[in-house]
Image 1: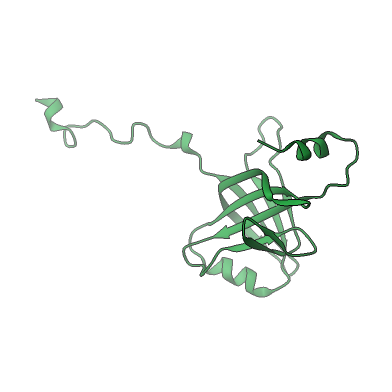
Image 2: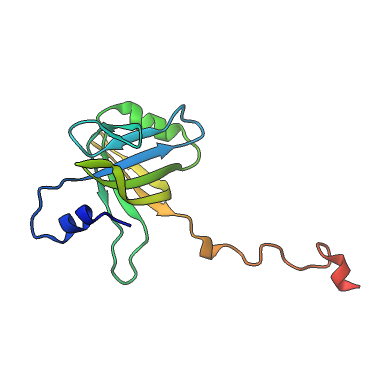
Length: 155
C-alpha cells in the first residue's frame, strides 16, 4: 500500500517530491544483478545501491486493444550494454520499483517478474519491451487425459 506521503504527492497539483524508478536486471549469465535509477546521483534502497543512469520507462497504455507491455529506452552510452544483451540467449528478468527520493527505502509500487524482450539498439539508444508472463495462454489442464498417459481410466 502506498504511503500517505506518496499519495499526497500524486494527488496534489504540484509537489516538491521526486519520484524515482529503480530497475533491477537479473539473468543467470550475469555475475550479479544490474541496478540502475533514473536519477543524477546513486541511490541506496533496501541496502542495495542503484547507479544513476539515464533511461525512460513508458507504462503500458490503457486504450482498447493496447498491449500489456511497458517500454524502456536506455542511453547506449557504452557499447558493452548492447554486447551484453546480444550475448544472452533468453530474456533478462526485470523488477521495477517506484520510490520517493526523500524515502528511498519505502517502495511505493513494485512490478516484479517482467521480461525484457524485443530489444533493438542504435548508436544512441537501446529500446525494449517489458512484458509479464501470460499464464492465461498456457494449456489447461497441463496433462491431457489419454490412454497412453492414464491407462487405468480406459480399462
